[in-house]
Amino acid sequence: MSEEAGEKTHEATPHRRQEALDQGQVVRSQELGSAVLLIVALGVLLYQGQQIARFLGSLMRQALGADATFTIDQATLATRWRLVLGEAGWVMLPLLGALLLAAIGVNLAQVGFLFLPKKAGFDPSHINPIKGLGRIFSTANFVRLILGLAKISVITGVAVWCLWGKQNELIGLAALEVPQIASYLATTLLWTAMKIAAAILMIALIDYAYQKLKHEKDLMMTSEEVKEEMKNLQGDPQVIARRRTVQRQLVMNRMKSQVPKADVVVTNPTELAIAIKYDYETMPAPVVVAKGAGVLAQRIRRLALENNIPIVERKPLAQALYKQVEIGQQIPTEEYAAVAEVLRYVYQLQGKKVPGAE
Image (tube, rainbow, N blue to C red; front, side, top):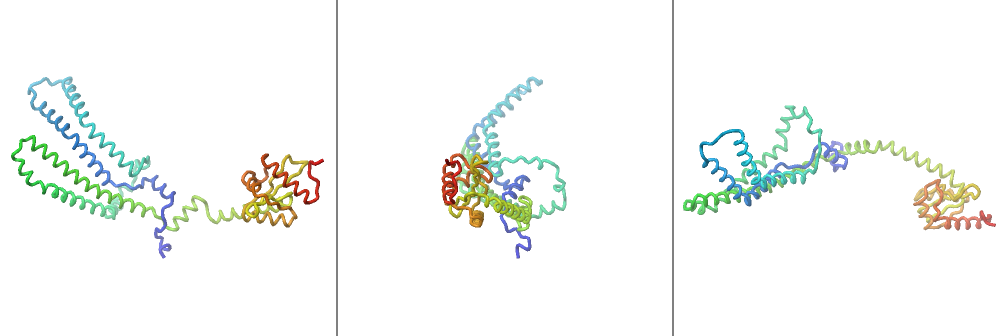
């Protein structure tokens, strides 16, 4: 009943997956990228935060503690800006570099390297108000709403849990100096933010699992889609069947005309059959005129019996000729001795003179 209704019951084929990849339909969670970037940024700040704070404090002291009157010209401003930007770039390099590497890494881990120039073009469907309303009230947006509410609840819960146990320490800050208060608050806030980021990462992993499940469900195919894809890739099955029937008939007709002309049929003994013909006066070497395995081998043996062609069992020779020689080709030189021995046996069995003998 589901097949008739056109439900998607078949797993996506490799071709379907490649088409989706070419169109940019991949498993990707924005929440996962944001969570990883947040954790990386907080981790860098925990180890480099003091250096950044010292730089910002030094920059503020230079700006506020310098002489109020100084020459303002282009050269002076350019020099000061070069010094400030140079020092700021060097101090912020670990943070910015870590964020850049994390952003590239998390996206490559999710979707790999994709080059989709078609996505850069203008798509009128993106500004279609009807489709826009459909996207607003879609299941995906509902899931995003649930995840957003979950993030708010998690952030609130983790923050309260982390700070609730530090009530006495926070009250005791009044007895400390300003630098000590600032250091304690910065460390406490960073570690609290790190715990919040770890909780958000768990939610992001759930979102990624949902995106992967949704992606696999969207790629599933109906029976009609599978049949249509096979028809497009391989051709119409009925045409293929007719073509194979014609090819099989041509092979059978050739066997009917060539096997009766053979001098001997070498078998293995039932799986393989190779028909060999040799004319001492016109052929430089014996030639394989027909060969087959399975049903074709049975047909060759039947034709040989009907036309009184000798059948000789030689397993190694039959396997070698079947693998190495195509129909109409001469036997290889390394098999000359074995084929000559078979032909000599056949000629003697039939009371014929061995070709080439004195």
